[in-house]
Length: 109
Image 1 (cartoon, rainbow, N blue to C red):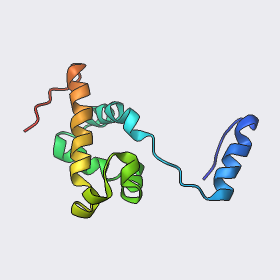
Image 2: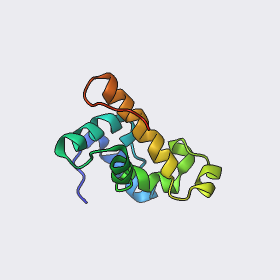
Image 3: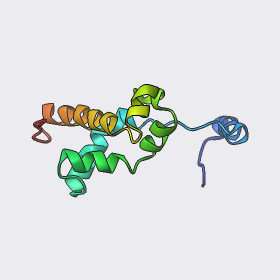
Image 4: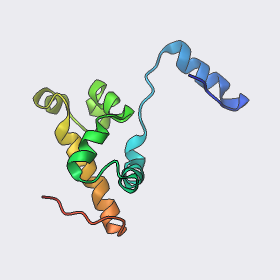
């Protein structure tokens, strides 16, 4: 990969590379915006497809590695190894935000 940054932040990124620290996902904070984009593109047409789509993100990869950081306990992961319920909850939360903004029509079934 290629990293473009300012000279003032160069040491920060070099330390990430040298210390092999995991880079955590910030996707949850922008999930509603990204879900909206996928809906507009036609990639996602319902909540089930949204849950599947979320399974292809870096967020999901990091959730599997460190579930507690992303709001799921180790016990939840033990009972639901693919964290499907957590993904359902995330999609629901994002869909409610989009519904309140009148960007989509959402009814949880």
